[in-house]
Amino acid sequence: MRKFTPLLLLLFCLSLSLNVLAAAGIATAHPLATKAGEEILRAGGNAFDAAIAVTAALAVVEPYSSGIGGGGFWLLHRARDGFETMLDGRERAPLKAHRDMYLDEQGNVIDGLSVDGPLSAGIPGVPAALEHLANNYGVLSLKQNLQPAIRYARQGFKVDEHYRRMANFRLKALQASPAAAAIFLDKNKVPDTGYVIRQLDLASALQLMAEKGADGFYKGMFAEKLITGTNQAGGIWSAKDLQQYKVVEREPIRGQYHGMKITSAAPPSSGGIALIEILNQLSAFPLEKMHDSQLTHLVVEAMRRAYRDRAEYLGDPDYVKMPLERLISAEYAAGLRAGIHPQKATPSELLPGVEKNYPGTDTTHFSIIDQQGNRVAATLSINYPFGSCFVPPGTGVLLNDEMDDFSSRPGTPNVYGLVGAEANAIAPGKRMLSSMTPTFLETKDRIAIIGTPGGSRIITMVLLGALVFQQGDDAERIVNLPRFHHQYLPDIIFYETNALAEQTINQLQQMGHQLKASEQSWGNMQLVIKNKADGSITAAADSRGLGAADIIH
Ligand code: GLY
Image (cartoon, rainbow, N blue to C red; front, side, top):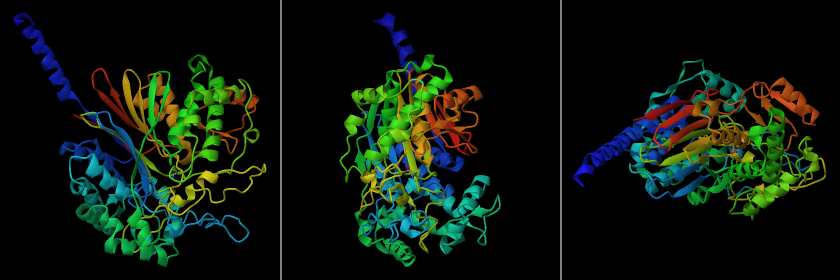
């Protein structure tokens, strides 16, 4: 026995040093949000506390992407027992909403009504989700976790070029809301770089949440201000809308791809279902042996079929029955695969048709793992840049325009005379369909916490990331991977200019694909990877954005 003592001691020291070395990792779309998460981890918070701090900080410093006037999905993994859940803090339609609310008397969609101003806003879910996270998963108080964001709101943050681009894109809509213009513009114009955006009303709103929890937002004087301001400008909110808002914990969607476990967002996000439906179709193809055009063709065909199903079947699980088991089954994937021609594009018009629906393009994602192994992948949104561009006076809360993620005109035949998208029709209290895809990937060696903004392209970005993660690529390569995308309608492969070589483009065209190079890159992926063998962490923020990744020892 004594002979073994030094060995045991050595093993004990080694495991101690691994524990000491165990690191945490954070990747977010803004350096101040990453710092907020780090501050909370260093103060003894876990990944869930850090997620609260990061969510609130992003609401302040990335007002064009997410906010307490918006919603999101937080995918959680608790290390102590392996429990996994998805917090659904998605916005709900106001109770006075109805399916034709964005149509004129002729049944045509009224331009802008579901995008700009208070009528486009769903009932926010972020405040309820933050309280839920703190009460059920964090170890610090909500109050402590909100402190960095309150500080940022009071002290302000500096306008950068990205902010200017976003504000310029939404300038008219921002100018239409005096309270929004006073906060986000400088004398009604896009502020110069370096201009400091201070948000004192937002700081007070966060402070109220710090003192009273979600009730500080959904009840009392503050709620009255939100409702009065919204309705005086043409909105349809009621006290009941705010009082009734509830976060829902949903079972994540799970799948497998060549031994890699996928855990992803459940409806009302389409992300997990579409991601797994695509991977299932691809699983029988030897992609690693294929040349680029063959591989791109097959990936595109699988995307096309999953996006068609997304539009046809998916919506709020509390309102619609969906064939989820079937959509992610191997048998269903085999059927879809059988319809893919190895050398020829399937025109989308030959697949059963559905209404066109192009979700918004601005959102944010962050990924966190703490020293204990708790994980959060969260994708949050107010939909379009600066959401509805409307702030109820005196609240500092920029409202989302997530109502645009509903199908404004379901049931109307598309150009091919076919109908669909009924599952995502507007109804009072219903959650609108999302593409947000916060995801965990796990191979035998590594764990990834991955996600990105990017509207309908979110799912295909996470897909491409998952495919190369499975093949062993590192965090930097994955987030910076050039991207291509197909979403059934329009029937076009969109690609970043460096994603496809000229020869590949020619070959895809010969197969019958239409392609369009995107002038702008898309996405802003945030990724944290844990190596199972030694516990080491790597993290990367997409170089297309301004984000920051950090490892904390
Ligand atoms: N608003 C973007 C999404 O939820 O997909």
